[in-house]
Image (cartoon, rainbow, N blue to C red; front, side, top):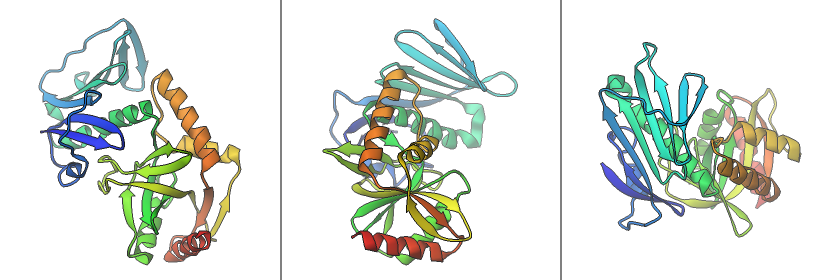
Length: 284
């Protein structure tokens, strides 16, 4: 399947193999217009994958990274040494090819979704968008981000908050983009949004970011710059090239200057969502 997508001002010429994670989602971002500046993102499935060696080699975890002045390849392996996947891309990300081994079988759709999302976030950073690990909820015309590490209660608190606010809905369940325009911070949905694939093609003004912490008592407190940076760094997609690192640092600094960022100590019940609801009402 091939579809032209527009996400913010990012144009993606996307070729994928499986509907499992994209059906009824990707169409919301589809456009009929082809743009010369489109990034090509192509996923294929093959039987025998072969490693293409380049000038430089770097080994990390179970990955091998080959690169030269124009292209980079990232290779992962099965335990028996066979190649599981190859991600090859131009160093400006204009063309990205993801090749999956058909022996992944039932896991092929998941690998396609995760790896294509990973490479889309690299493109986003090139364009000065910041992918954040958070649940982005639209309420009263603005976006509230609930963020935190795994098992911090993000999904649970999102559910409680949505139960209290019937007109609220999720813009992106797990990986929204942040974009700074004209001195304001906006939140955008993308087709890549976590295992439940809940998202909306919207660009919404950010109200605030709330970093969750499990507690026996609920409280919401704004935090200092140092802690803001520390928490953001733990919950963003980190880039792999120098230019994108520079973009990330620029966006992070501006985000901290322009945003309200809080520590949200919350209990594992709906009372914490009520405290957040009251807090938001007081901000209006």
